[in-house]
Image (cartoon, rainbow, N blue to C red):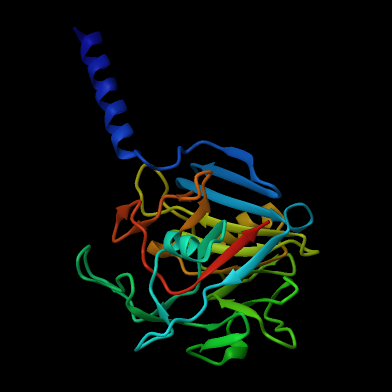
Length: 285
């Protein structure tokens, strides 16, 4: 009788966990080449809290990735029409995409009371440009904002604009500078995170998303933990992008449809994508 009760309890726990984790990436380590010159890593940690990390490592030498940022839209009241990261990937035909900068206006009071919805006007918080057109100048002194610049020749630099700005996307802070973690990063607030980084010689680009706000799956990461993770990966420069419910990583599937690689959580609803302002996209030949 006792054995039967134990087996029944175990079965209920197994079924309950299966339903809870349905659709989410399995919390098991993964390392595989998903496209030519693109390696996907899934890192799983349990201490000091649960953390599921998704990493795409892009090798310029082997995969010839071409980077782009979301172009502006003709929309009243902002620079862009809000769209999810999956919608961005489909609309612009890129093979990889992550969410970009924070933006305004924005609120999320409940699953039905939020802004923006798809198509509503938004503007990135920081400096932004696409194909040579500057469409956001930032909420503060541009020189103080961390910005990733992508030249026409596809070279990535942080906070060092080329003579002619081609693509640019900003974040809220640098995490790693010259191989060293930025001092004073917050080590208490745990959230979903998105970051972009490069190695010392610029050959490898790292796109990193940490899932969060999902009990028994992934709590998230502090900014200090994010920086430590990036440093361990070999990142020499890294910038924090918009996090929380915005954090999303998408790849084109074999059928051409978008595949969400992480478990986004908008309005505390797992697997719900948030419409955001701009994105960082990658074309792969």
